[in-house]
Length: 267
Image (cartoon, one colour):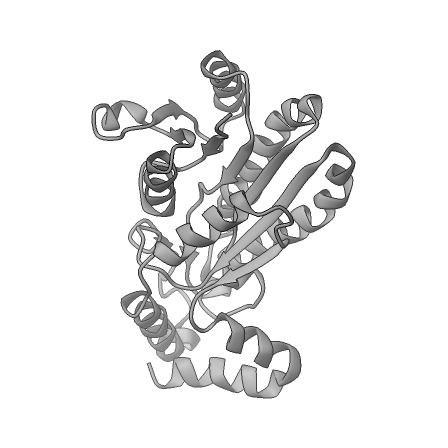
């Protein structure tokens, strides 16, 4: 029987590309969007309404989901967004909302579906995190913190779910060409003049990373590989520079920090 795969945030970016790819490969794909009516006739897979920030929406979605399918094999947590800006200048409410979506939203959707995975004694939860969930670059403090939180949560959860034959995997991309940057919320309001010069350089460094981003196919390939793997790894960084970044952070921390500082200074 073909696997049923649920992908949150499937109306654009990684989610849309992944959903189309898996649908073409013969999987039963169900995606989510805050406004699925906008995509009627534009996608070839089932698209259901879900706002991961809204508890009522999650409850309604879960009920509707199992009206369309009695089987769920894989959950891909993909929905989220990015806040950019100097940490001290970022309003706490904006930082809190970043966590509400990227961390709490992801956790609440996962928890809503865990009873079904436990009942069937199998399943897989793949969460799209970020390389900044493993490192901490400037100008992305709250986004990085939210992704670190996601990494830590699922790192612990995987042990608790092993008894139910539920696999837990993370995917940690570097910069890729998606709508993440386009939909980013900037906190660069210039409220603290001491940061004026650094803010300009940090914004330029962030933009440089966006401009030089890789095509997203590698991320889709990685997720597809995890779905088909018998023993998928927990942590799966994706991107041409991930190996070097993580090696330097672990074994040459001073060189790693120097490279981060240099990336801002030369932007």
